Length: 632
Image (tube, rainbow, N blue to C red; front, side, top):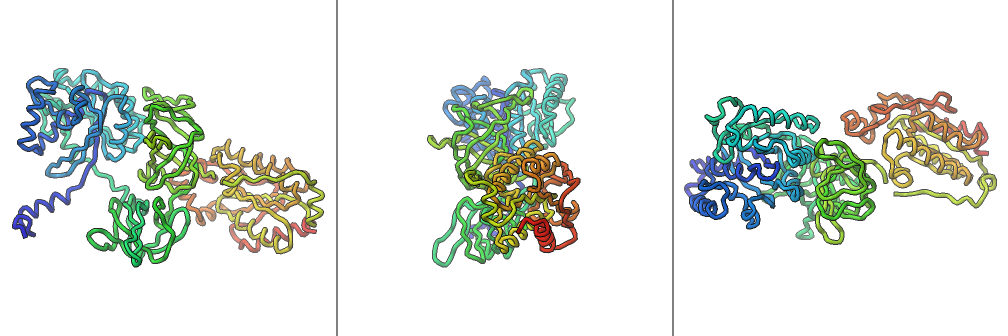
C-alpha cells in the first residue's frame, strides 16, 4: 500500500476531511460584461487551485486576448471557447470546482447575453445559490431582472447581490446603497429567502476572499465567507422517497434490479414501495451499489433496487414510498421558459421529458406570459425565444409528478421538438389539473318511454353529493351492484372518472366546477332518455348547479342524496391524501378547505355518512327507490 494513502497517515486524514466537506452548487449570472467570468477566475486564483503552467498560460493568453491591459485577465480561465475569447463574452455554461478549508464548491459561469438566456437556465437548474452580479457603473438592467426572475422560477432562494467593479466608482457607498435599494424593490415579489448584498471588485480581489481596506464602510461578510456559511438545504433527504427508474438491470436470469438515482427521501431494505402508475406494491429485497449492498440509501445515491415480487417495471416508471405517493395526472399548469427560435404553438405535438420518462404532449393554453421588467402578466397566444409563460399542458399518458417547488426532478421537464430532436423549452410544474381519457356519448334515436318500458324500470338520476371522502362513490357503487342483482339497467357517473374524458380540460376553480356539473347534468339527462337509472357521485359543492341539474330533468327524475359526513371525519379518512395536500397549500380550491361546500336545503334523502356503514346506507337508498315505484 502507498504510504501516503495508508490509513492514519496525514494524507489519508486530509482526504477524509475533504470527502466529508459538504458541497455547495452556485451560479454566477447577470447582464453581459458584469464580470461573472472574472469573478470565478479570481476565486480559482485566490483559493490557489491554479498550477504554475496554468498561470503561465493565463499570463500569455492575457497578453493575446485580455481586456485589462497588462494585468491578468481572470475571465480567460473559464471563457474557453475561441469565440468567447475573441468577443470577450461568455457563450456556453462553464462549470468549475474549487474548495476552501470549510466547504467544496461547484460554480456555473452562465452567459449574460439575452441570446443565451437558455444557457443561463441550464446552469441554474442544479444550483443552490445564485450570485447575481451588477456592474456598479450601470446598475440594475433588463437582463438582471430576467436572470433574477428565472432564478426564482427555478427554485433558488438564496441570492448574493454582488455589486462588482466598485473600484470604478471610487468604492462609493452611495452608489452601492442605491443599487441595493433598486434591486430589493423589484425583487420583493420573487420569493427569495435571503438577499445578501456585497460590494466587490473581482479584478482586484476586493471583498472576494479577504476584506478590502478600500471598503471600510462595509461591515458584512466577504463573498467567500458568505459562501462558506450559507446553509445547504436538506429538503430532498427529508422528503418522501422517490426514484425514477433509469434502467432495468438484468445481467442474468438470477438477477433483476431497477437502477436509478434517488431524487428525494430515503429507502430501506424491506421498505414498502409502490410503482406509480400501475399502483403495484412490493418490498425492497436489496439495495445494490458499486461498493456492495446497503441497508438504506438517501437522496443523491445511485442504486439498483431489487424487489421481493415480480413486478412489471420499465424505464420511466417512478418508485415511491407506498404510504406517501406522488400525484398522477395527464394535465398540468406549468411555467415554461421557451428556448427556441421557433415559437411555442399551442396544439402542436412535442416530446416532454420528465425525470426519466418521455411522453408525447401538447400545450393546450397559454394563460399569460410575464414581462420581466415589471413582472406584469400579458396576454399571449404564443411564446417567443427567451419568453416565460404560464401554460396548461396535456400529456398523452398520465405521469407521476410533484410540484417543482417540492421536488425539482419530479416537477421539472424539458420540451423536445419531435422533428429536430432539439430541446426547445424547460418547464416547472406548478400543480396538476387532474383531468384525463374517456368521453361518453349516447344515441338519441329511441324514445325514453320505449327504453324505460323495455327495461321494466322508471329512469331517474340519483345525485350523491357531499364532501371529498364522505363515502359517495362507495355507497353509489354498492347501490349499483344491488340494482344490478335485481336486473336493473344502471350507469354510474363518478366525479374522478368523468375528469378522465368528458371534463379533462377543467380544473377546480369555481368557474370550472360550475362547467363540470353542467356537462355532467347534460350527460345524465341523455342517459335518463336512454331509460337508465343513473347514479351520479360528485362533490357538486354549489346549490345553484345542483338545482340546474334538477331543472334539466322532468319532475320525479332527480333524487338528491346528501351524504352527510362531517369534515373532521372525511378529513380523517382522506383515502387519497388530498386533505393533507390542501392543508399544506399544495392543492388549490379544495372543497371544505379553501373552497366552500353548500349543503342541500331540501334533499330527498340524507345519509348519515359519518356514523353508519356504507352497506346499510346503500340499502336505505334501494328501499327508497322501491317505495317510490322506480324499480317496478
